[in-house]
Amino acid sequence: MFSEGKVEVIAGPCAVETREQVLRTAEALSSLGIKILRGGAYKPRTSPYTFQGLEEEGLKILSEAGKKFNLLTVTEVIDTEFLPLILKYVDIIQIGARNMDNYALLKKVGKETAKDGRWVLLKRGFAATIKEWLLAAEYITSAGNQNVVLCERGVRTFETSTRFTLDLNAIPIVKKLSPHPVIVDPSHGTGHADIVIPMSRAAIAAGADGIMVEVHPEPRKALCDGAQSLDLKSLSQLKEEIGKVARALGKEVV
Ligand code: PEP
Ligand code: MN
Image (cartoon, rainbow, N blue to C red; front, side, top):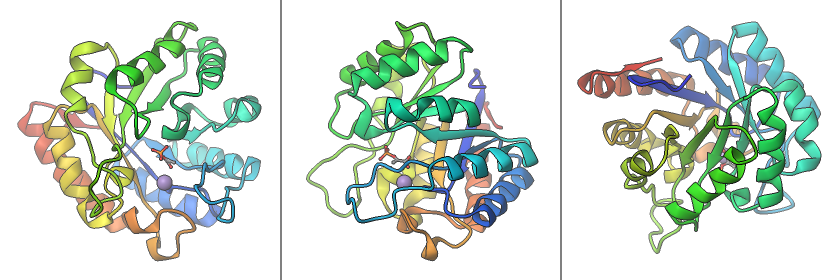
């Protein structure tokens, strides 16, 4: 995973909601040749009154879908308390923007994943400088796991027409300053499904090693982040369009 000349695609719903939702999504990924399925089972929601995730039930669904369609799985850990269970079910551990500076969590994830070297996907905090983000990654690497992929997901600015401002500057800077692959999340970075594809093309053009996008079989019914989720047909279009950009750079989308 994450090698020179390759562009990885990670796709899946913001949150695991039902078995059917995840299996339908996984089937679509598989038919497009996408290898990594995402889905949140523990959601760090801004409001405590919104859907918080299916927890262990969600991990089981994600794991079942991964096995059935031969996909790697990624989910977010929001607290050290849930880490043992997540490690049992899921391949790649995500640390979200809201936890980028949770140093106890970074250390614990670093220590536990060092045992088998599994990948940790570290998102940039939405008010974190690139330097702070790279230092957060060093909490993981200095605990013994070098397999960290950095994910730019937008930062907070004065702009209100998008949910966040996707900082594509970060891609070449991170590539210059760190040994880690860098991917881009244009779903959270924009908040709007209709600009996810152009920003995905831009991310690949700027040198990203991959993208992570939210998809849902029925975005309008999503319990979480529906407005920024692509439907399954748009996912196929996205794959095709980033393929063109990748090929122009002598890379291929996996
Ligand atoms: C997510 O990937 O679902 C998520 C919560 O992202 P972020 O941490 O970037 O807000
Ligand atoms: Mn989301």
